[in-house]
Image (tube, rainbow, N blue to C red; front, side, top):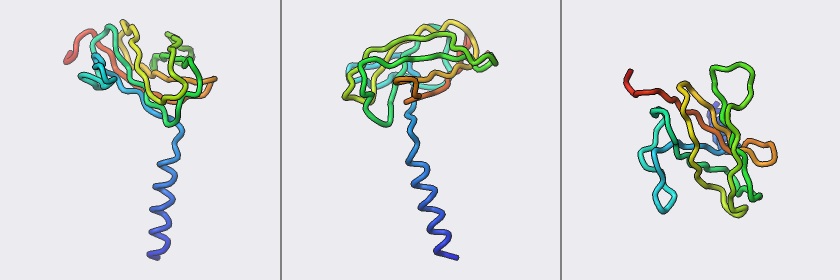
Length: 128
């Protein structure tokens, strides 16, 4: 029984580590070293800095950011933006305008494949 338990733990760890998607963090700003300042998941509407951290190097000079409003069922992006990147790196940041309230899913794509994603909630004022 102990062997099965150990095998289950190993499979779980390996499977969790094999995710191909990175993450997107949302911040008020980014410092000179590219680290986020005042990061979180709920913000007031306005420009938001996003930090994109892929699992692997981008391998291209442009990534595509797509913003989806999770309340909409048509699965069409409400904003699409190309971001120039260094192909030899796996992280970058960008600033995007977010002036509508709601919950949004942002994905970073390379050649149609999602390399990072994250969600953020926007409100006119926090603590309504």
